[in-house]
Length: 385
Image (cartoon, one colour):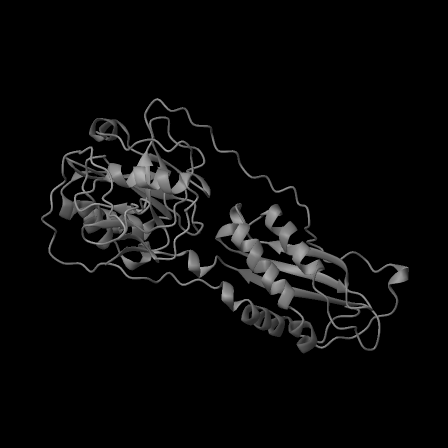
């Protein structure tokens, strides 16, 4: 190809992956280890709220909406999540979802998918006996796209990175035991004892994408914490807490995201026009050395993505670099996620990148293969001491 950068495609891929290494994600974190089944029992509902202290002076300290008491129940946690969301304190730097062994603390990033967030239901067993599947709502959308009519709906209240897979499941804790309901394909289980239910939950999390854990209002946080601690390490980053929606709530069907093809050029860059001048030359090192703005822009694009590309994508970025080092053409040759909004963002970041002027002067065509994955900082452990 005329004006191609002196950079083999393989070298370009390795170089780009290197400069974008800050976007790579490994699902790691602290979690419980398997051992004898806990003996804690599911408690009955209480009306108590969070336990707070006072400052050393005469003025009471402002209440901490994340603080939960020694005997806190799941209903208290849901109310705490609503208070955190209402006061715009959703982000957390504590690195886990639930902290403590009484008193407890909601330490997760709160990501309420539907407002107003309802109260946790007092009883779920009758509904779960009739529902063999679940319908999950998170900030990343709905799973599955076409739910069964009798599916029980659960809305996420804590955050995770975007799920890489399209299937999911819900785990419910009640006074009768533990239930597992698939969101799409999979087997329904329950009510099971804590030991059997924890085993079913581990298998479900290992084989599913997004998983929401919900409970009746009266379930103790001690029981919830014990269950979360028994989930496998791969659960970190794809398990969130959720609350079951009332049966009489009407929810909209998912709207598929259509790919209108904008920004795509599967056949490569358009033909060179007469005013483009002669082909120039740029070394691969010169191109890679100028990719700082593109790297930062790509990270921002992934941080704000809400479409299918948020879970990760591979794209080919085709660029025509003009004689002054600025792009005269840019398009995406391939997009594994088919996410037009993310492509728009990446192309904007590319156009803001200025390269060295080619020498000899002229235009240079180059294609960069990019692999983008979610930011690892979005991953939180399920429980921490």
